[in-house]
Length: 402
Figure (tube, rainbow, N blue to C red):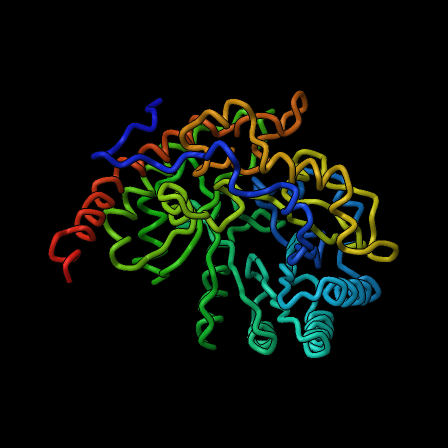
């Protein structure tokens, strides 16, 4: 595997001897965002879904009840006032969150709006949906409550329908694209979230998104897997995707969040995302039964339950539980092999769930470690000459004497 060699005299930003993030200070910061599981079921049966990898979710209420939603607002009010928060994010999720229903969504939106007016806190609503239920009424609800919508779409029909199908095994690509168009009728441009298919065609995926659907921003996720798994290599796909983006679309203003995050890390900045890059993971989740849990993606490790519930516990109580603290500590205290790696700041050890093993807990490099090294090395080799050109331009004599 290539080491972090200098490119034209420029070196990547490694992890400093003293971490730029103080675990002690970060552990004191109040929760300022939660994932809210409005529904524990889904109207699709995606082959790779992390949520249903844990069979215990089938015992949860299919939808969050009105009483639990009221408890959520009450606990959120308490939390905002206790910590004097001026901003809070509710990430509405599932299963499929639109199974929550329009009437229930309207009540929740009005309650969040009233709470924001009472406390002066800017409460932001975000939702990630497969789009199958989106119609005009749903779009009007999103507009009414300024909901930031993200659609899950895995590329052209051939790639998407291979892994994303409904409960009857029927393809869903056309219906998801129809949801995109329904949103656009009302001037709404959703975010797009794709999960990479290592066997897929990265050129076809990007051309479909940009040339055919006219998207300008998207994210392509690394498939969820733990260090106990043996997932296929993702490096060829992501390297191909980067090259297509860099060669054809980057200069046209098309943004891919993963690549933006990696480039930010390479030049010493924060990645701004949780999936890659060094920094604290402080995520918390509210399940449809009101349980307050740690990071929901870590359900694939079996380590999210904390015995807390909105009915009896405050939101911030999650920070004192072993599951939350184990994830938080591991996000800042990387495995020994990671600490010595020149890409440590860029990679951050990889997504926290990808570092879990039944033997060592989170004290492992990512199961995708070799792939991430290959991808980051490739990106560094591609962007290095451009960084050098920019640096030389900014220090040219005519600039210095201007």
